[in-house]
Length: 82
Image (cartoon, rainbow, N blue to C red):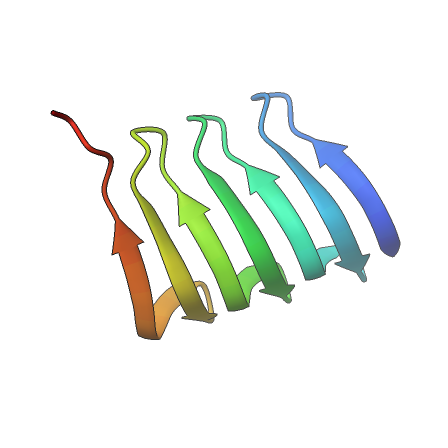
């Protein structure tokens, strides 16, 4: 895969965005099988650069990722359960 496209796994998870040499690379959005979503930069099949991770409970993290790990400053947001 190379360029823009969408791939859906048999679990229901899917990725829509840029590909390079069969790996997620560039801008893209991944919907995981548990309903969590990552929307942002990818490099060599890993979250790398600016992005936003939102978990199924509504909590989110927006900031930088390096080699698939949160890195540096970022902002966590928790859902209001009141």
